[in-house]
Image (cartoon, rainbow, N blue to C red; front, side):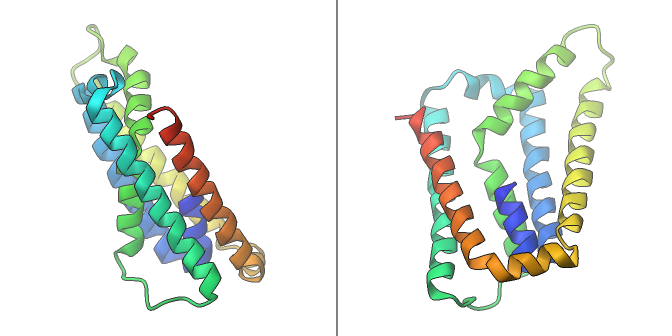
Length: 178
């Protein structure tokens, strides 16, 4: 949410929606793995979970570094590629092992014998549709002129706060790993 909010405010509606599509692509991947049982493997911990957490924490720190660099330079460096927000959203979601474990926990009771064969597909579609709809509405609401004007005035400080928030998330992720 931090990354999506910051992107929608700083880069506008199109970038926000591209990031939503990246996040939802990651959701689709996680939901597929959870339904397919891969989440049980990650829930056990071990080397795979450790590696995913290290990569995720490094990615969060890299995102924070970009925000710190931007706020210290006080300029936007170059144009952001059209696919930049999509890829940032995708990797932010894919590198979050908690999403997969959450989905596995939520879906497990609904994937037991006795449910129709189409039920896993229905669960997957509900997750994707909800994520897409809710996050698109959020990005759209962030485009209200008063909200955007407030961000433009305080953007440097907000970016700095988001950067600190990403570092805190990375530390929290690593705290359970190391």
